[in-house]
Image (tube, rainbow, N blue to C red):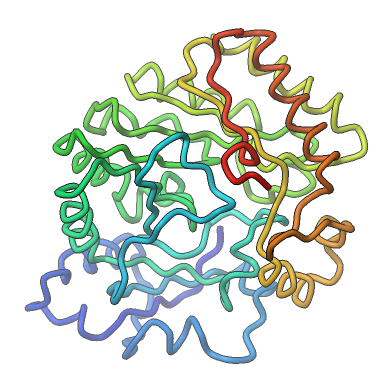
Length: 339
């Protein structure tokens, strides 16, 4: 992770009378000696034309902004609800410190820079409105890795504190971060799920740039469990490399050597899939990335491996899990979408 010598801040947040000025100052203080460039709106920088996202990936800039308009969204078809009727997600940060070759963010956003929205309490207020109607299952770390940014934002702590006061809310924080030092500082609550995305080291080294290795993620997941949080293992997205069966079997053996798999709350299994629009943009931007040029099959606006390939991969992974723990809860994305 490399940051430039300046950060962008929406100018209204620099006003000491703004309710989110203190949160803005906290983030600015983290980046000591950086030049502050005031801007009118984050989109003036984030959405500008002729950006080179490939170059930006190695020199990501921070943009501090206020989130406006819609704050909470209904869960997308390619994401799993884990059996929850009222499934939503929100983005208090846009873009990620990591750089996975297959990440849909590469096709979703026009920039690799990171936008931090400081008005997280406005999102909390919207969630409280929804909670008056029904229990809410909320994913808060789809469009970033909040654990990887915790020193900068403190948002994992804020979400755990908020969830601990709202028992009808379940928060999922998905991550590939290897940090083990955050959990003791969080409010202990069983309605915040830390969902660890796990991949074989062969996939990590080839396609998950700047990420923690497998063993580091396993140790971090164990730290979360030891601190009293429910942990989900996400074997998602599965990538069809040449020796994929051996790689995923070896990965799972390593996991079981280091952790009691029966302590895991549940498991998510899914093969690679992506919006057709996002894949098109990724292919325009990353012409030399072989993974995204695989001959995927298209169905209802989404690309994925052919049905028989996806079924083979997901069934194989599910079999590894249930052989070790016959009582395990395993969720497959195709089971929910019907695709």
